[in-house]
Image (tube, rainbow, N blue to C red; front, side, top):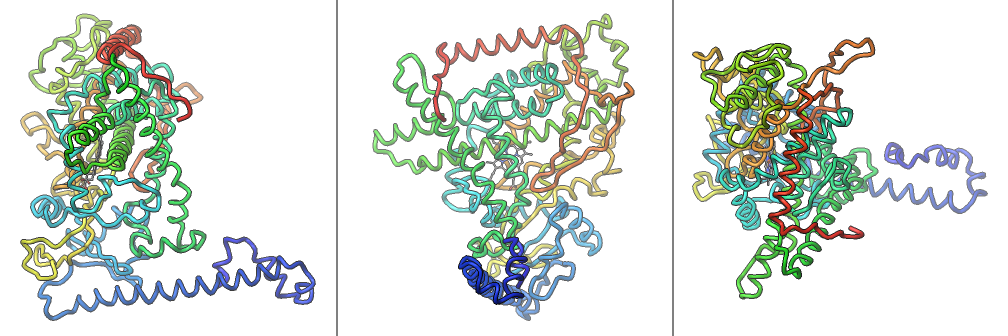
Length: 623
Ligand code: HEM
């Protein structure tokens, strides 16, 4: 059991104590105390590990027993061999497990794979057909979530993303989904456009810190929508707070895959035990989650009451203010309202966390692929230029042109997009090729390669009394966790030729010179748990892309010899699949761009202020 003492870093002193007992007895009382503490720690850890093994044996053998149960006609889906007692616990890699699942899927010639570890059962769906059938078509049965014990340890308030299927999930979804439908999100378009222009200005003015400009873009949109808070600059404290929380979540590992998620009582073990690193991580990062849940909410509520008492200013059209106003109104008229303050806090935090990091990480990927694929960037710019300069729809997707030569439709080389006008929302549906680039970014690098896991529940339509289900002759036990392997689906060679190649033209119809392939699937999830923020996110991404393409030239960074320096991007796959910071050369496409951006940003800010009664938000000390 010595390894259990490793983290105390005291092996030397305890060895000294045993090797020289007389010296030990003559030494101070603290050494004796330490020995007895170490012994009782060993005993407690021994008992914990014994209970842990017995529990896993029971749970694991019980499913192994069911595997051969003669009453169960259908076999479980195939799985690679596991260990006695521990099942597949040691076999599934923590990093890039989506690749391993995809390999196993080919090896066992099955799009559905089955795994067990320490009593937890999970299946991985490696094809769109399986994911669509189970998660979309049979969505009622597969809309639960596993319990996210690790996230509970991190201190999350009730959050739609992690809620189990049930009335509370229904209530949260009912409240969050309506303002985010395709038609409702039009309301947020002026805000998104303003922030896209500010992002481009920040990118041009401070290219070294380009990632902060992108984070600011995403955080400022979500802060305003959720809390009514204006986030003025990339160095604002709210950007830092949101970035810390995103990092805490992003590096927490794939959801529901920690030892606490597999065996919930292990959350009570000490976090210094060698196999409890994830518990330690949860404890270390708890503050980031508490801060992001509490501090913007406190500020928003403060502002709410300030505005409430001010006859000139109306309460903001943000989530917290609207929900609080509704609660107070319902209280005055004795109407039932189950969306308590804790729910409002959780709902707003969900929007911020689920909405800012995903959007920012996707913009980072877009910039990466534009830099690495100059031909794609030129073609997308050519399309934007064509539409901005002619205001028409190109008769066919516009072809590439070299950046130094004017596009055929431009009157002179200085007459280029971004110098006459900036993209508007009316232009967005016309940007066909720009949208294909976005789809290709989704396909080649899904942010959640294994989605957010669903879980199956008993359903009134079940034939099996235990709630087990069958798919293609395979049994899926009730309560199984289900991971859609979005990464594998979007690299399925039956759907995509040359899947590793970044090639937006693949989606064009064959008559247009493309391969006629389908758009990627699963990036925003499936069935009843599909992302509620999809339309808002897509609007943010499209206006950001259009604005960047109209105003900025992205290139490889310049090396010490003055030549472009190519690089291999690095990714992190802990939790979300994100690209790690990289260097990029960012320049305005023309000298007029800055002036144009300044003018439009000013107009957008004035319009926003006028809509707000013409007063600045009050300062809020100490929050
Ligand atoms: C590029 C941006 C985004 C991506 C790639 C993304 C992706 C996802 C994925 C994969 C899921 C899991 C769906 C499932 O379980 O099947 C999800 C759920 C969710 N997303 Fe997003 N999301 C994005 C932006 C947003 C935004 C902007 C918001 C909020 C305004 C948001 C709010 C949510 C919520 C609340 C859920 C949980 C839904 C539930 O469990 O019922 N997301 N998202």
